[in-house]
Image (tube, rainbow over all chains, first blue to last red):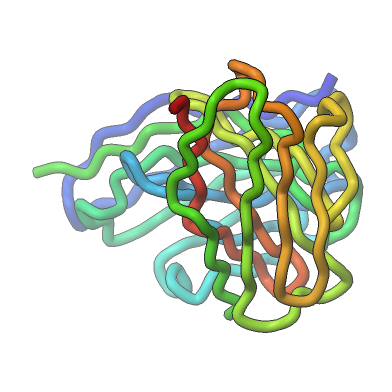
Length: 121
Length: 107
């Protein structure tokens, strides 16, 4: 079965960076785009971007361009999302998600369990 | 960027009632690349509807989606206890954006 298992909670100081991992299993890692979505406490969902694990190509939401980097390691079927210059309003649960089928324009059927990133001095 | 607006913000209904949720886009959503998700506290979102009207695997038929262009609707024909949650629409045709959500709570 498809599983996306994310790394554990992080506490960071303002200005620092965080790198969240998403380990995929149960399918061919390079066959499906992975999205990153975040949710601040009590707020809605916010799309951050996607990575094509096959090519390494990425597309970031305008809001995060210059501050986010999405990468992958195909040898261990793991995707990463690194966010730099953290601010208090980056405190959120970060999710990775995979589409229901291959291709870029696909809704997200499978989700990781979420990783809480807390930014606090 | 396509902006999605959802209404109402909160919908207070009783079990067995019909729920109608609206999602409006600031510009046309290409190829009806519009999805609906359900989210309960402490859980990841769950895909309900994709392509504006196709139910995801395992989703009960009391959930239905409709619409095209800029206006979309999620209908829950008869609310059950487990349906009280927050619902988000998402367009995935031009980059991706989510709506702000509609909370369906018990009246």
